[in-house]
Image 1: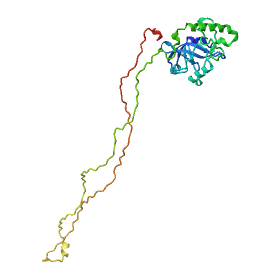
Image 2: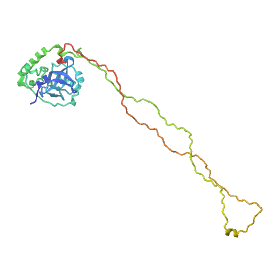
Image 3: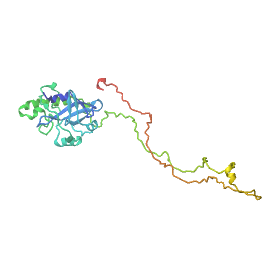
Length: 297
């Protein structure tokens, strides 16, 4: 069993983000398809403001009616009289405002007839103007049910007459308060904190190395003459002095210095991420109500 159009009058409307708007005061039904196309939804403080909203892309679950548009867009909708049928020009203006070409119809409704005041005035917002495009009641599309349509029109007129003036507060009336608060706006910027350079300089150090060196020394060796050598010796004792020399050698260290490359040094950058905590005092406005039923807040 499908949903009944009359159920929309018992719904609570929410925007696409789930923010509560208010109750549904009027339902506009297409006179050709018999399906609801627009609703008038109350919003603002105490529900004293209202806007016309297309039902394109809506979701109706229980008594929760979720519309396909944001609260800001709904509040800024063109202001048309919800007690009169919408002209084609007004419909197009609403379509342009909401950009409904991006939303699709996903639900169909039964065209229940309004038999008495308990039926919530199905055509309260559409009694006049059947055939104008949008606004005629469900029964208005069937000529055989013209008597029902006339009854519905009378109920609509009575309901409109009984409405408190506050239900149709003009746009811009002093019936809502904007609450503001401070929020942290955190941004980062890159600043120059320093400069790194590579610089070479020369230091002098003393280095000691041990080098083994060799030298020749004279050592006198005396060897006795054997009998055989003595027998063969023909020399005589000479009155002249004789001498023999030996050349001595030694190693000496020659120290020299040379320059050789020993290391390559590069200067590179790397990023290190740290977490900093910043604390600020924020102000926010609060709203108190006087003389309002807590259930209505």
